[in-house]
Amino acid sequence: MILYGPPASGKDTVTAALSELDERFALLTKLKAGSGRGTGYRYVSSEDLQALRDAGRLAVETERYGNRYAVDRQDVEDLVEAGRAPVIHMGDTQGIRELCSAVPLAWTRVRLWVPREITAERSKERGDTDTARRVEAWDEADADLRAAGDAVTFDLTIRTDESEPMESAKRIVRAVGF
Image (tube, rainbow, N blue to C red; front, side, top):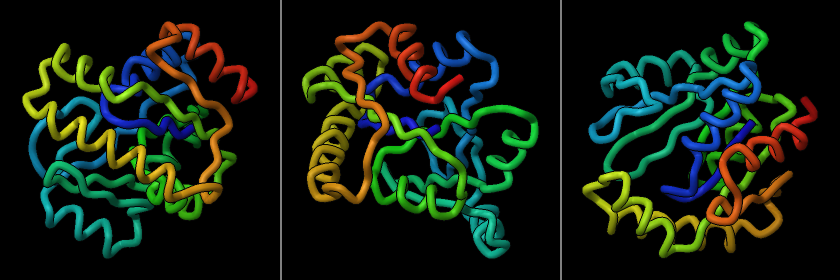
């Protein structure tokens, strides 16, 4: 499953609710070369990332906040082989297209959304030191969605400021068909 949304749209919170509801859901730990928030990431050096890239293991790579993020296709395969449903957080539509192409699973694509001002409020509440950059990323996500048009479709869209995390998780489980 792909959870798409701007910063502070509830990806971590909804993922926690999904895991609580059904233990088959497992957050895929993305690779991160850089610094900053570490939750949900496995730090790697730029050299390690290059070695994985050279080995053809990177399904998707993105850059944001001066960091490089990547999904190791082996990590996805390991979760699937263990009977788990990988949950991958994405913040751009190009990354969704690349992931779906590189790892041909029956992906359920869920758009988590909040208004711009909610992103700013949540960012401050969780102690981000770069709230202005998070709001800028919201603007980029909004523009990205408009530019993508029908190139990326979502199976479900949830306004997380209007839905409790567990209710959002239940809606997602129904969409996945578990």
